[in-house]
Length: 194
Image (cartoon, rainbow, N blue to C red; front, top):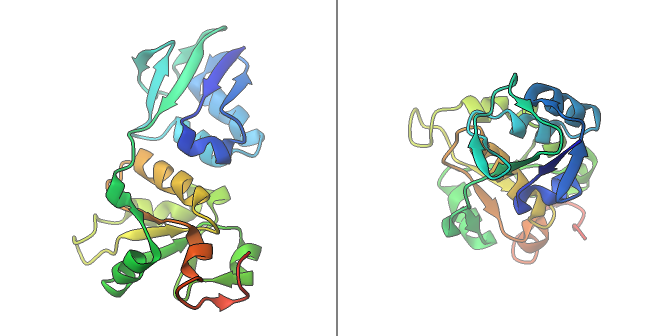
């Protein structure tokens, strides 16, 4: 068995700080995660900019790379910058400037109540429902808008932004406090979010 360790930004999505998995190739480990319903984390493990460490030493994210029994494999992510965390007032300014609101909650949560103009892209379906965002030119190039990730309270957006960055993006923000913070100042469509 190996121990697979996640960065704090992904604990909520993973449900734990670490997982125990059978030793094997990196692609096989990603397969175990997909079968366990952790598709976003499986994608993160093989992401183009995934920073992996095997027993503390840097390791390339290559699907055929073998991880030996008893090893600790860690996914390391660069820290988010202070300007990546935006309060509702700044989020509204960004939207007025053309930013794209991306709500990462599940479809039923989104239907209950959401920020006007937000598009629903459930984090559980990452990277599939994010493919156009990941492939879009950087903001400012070809008029592409910067995404601002939104969820109920701000935790899932940290996961979304971290995953987004692992796929080579430098842009993107997340709404501090999520829809709960937004609705304290601005209206939402649907029911208030508890």
